[in-house]
Image 1 (tube, rainbow, N blue to C red):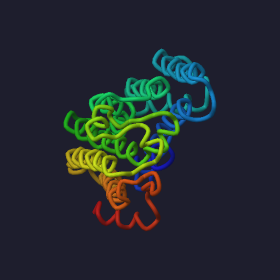
Image 2 (cartoon, rainbow, N blue to C red; image 1 turned 135 degrees about the vertical axis):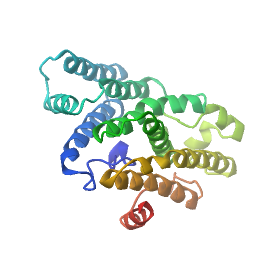
Image 3 (cartoon, rainbow, N blue to C red; image 1 turned 90 degrees about the vertical axis):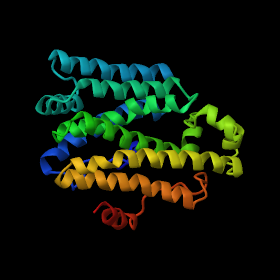
Image 4 (cartoon, rainbow, N blue to C red; image 1 turned 45 degrees about the vertical axis):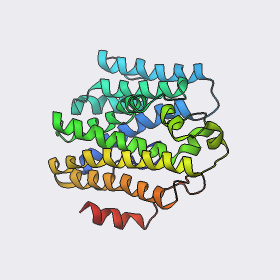
Length: 267
């Protein structure tokens, strides 16, 4: 999606067929609203979790056929039924956002990937359903792309996440490279930190390139949209490298002049 917490994903882009822009927008609204429960404002953890549980109850209402209680869930109910979208994918998103409320550190990369499985991969799978491209091969490739996008977002937002007392850098790899939380707090981009981030960036790039063959299985505007999204993630990695992995002072982000580059690379 292209804004806020989902800036590395497409959101109802003009590249998408007109008939699918509104369903993609509804999925985004659901994800963004639920994510804001976990991240925004000053509410205590118990309030955040209660709000997320309220979303779960409304998903249960869609499943059981109850009338939606809010405009968002009225739209979501219609989109789910019109396109036969699995409600489990929305539940997975809520699980990830709830985890953000209670879990601030990740012991190893497997834990990070498990978070991505629920925080990012459902978005790709929902798009595959919308475009009638939901096959086992496409799901596997999409999961790699979406996990890579989520991980790239982590590495561009190390400082932002630390301000929320979250560190997605795997704890075992921080120890291996000799990076401490005190270094992150001091915004110190020294040699050990650069080595750690170089390792993370290279792994994220490999994961993205492993999923990139997905575009060969897609068609038309959807193919171009996903290709641009993949190139957008790779471009962020390039910017992070060019900044010497110092996202504390040079957070990589897409600028207006990046879009022609991404379009040409996607083609």
